[in-house]
Length: 192
Image 1 (tube, rainbow, N blue to C red):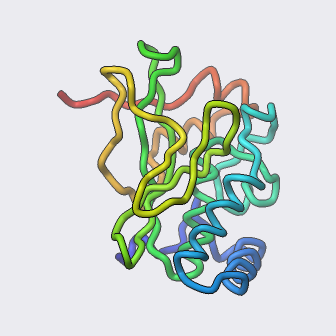
Image 2: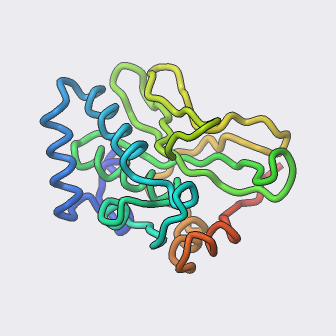
């Protein structure tokens, strides 16, 4: 579990502002599960999704997401992982492969988290941010993610990553504006 508890370049929970928020959330929670819920709701509701709000800059590191209060789903998942890891809660990164056009190609990755809850084991949460048609919630053991898998080539990817996928980091690092990222969303090829 150590790799799901470590600070890193993108899940930089040792940054002072991330540490401060992690400590504040811990003081508000009566249990570990409540702490996960509070951190999830903070990232979901207080960090604005870059596309929904048409916001720059493009963020990747957890500390930058918190500083600028904006990020794509991937970056928001980095912040949630940082807040929970700072409190000793194992947290990984997960991805879905979704259709951009509503059923067919092109496809892109969508970033979310898996959190290890003592009562239920690994549990996926999606702090992307709610809007009409998107209603992600924290309701363990039932998952309530932002997007269901509906198209034949869409997938819930089963891996729980300790670090962001390189293709995600590349997209968030290469482009300067949310529009540029939107035009070049990361994707991977599925193995048959």
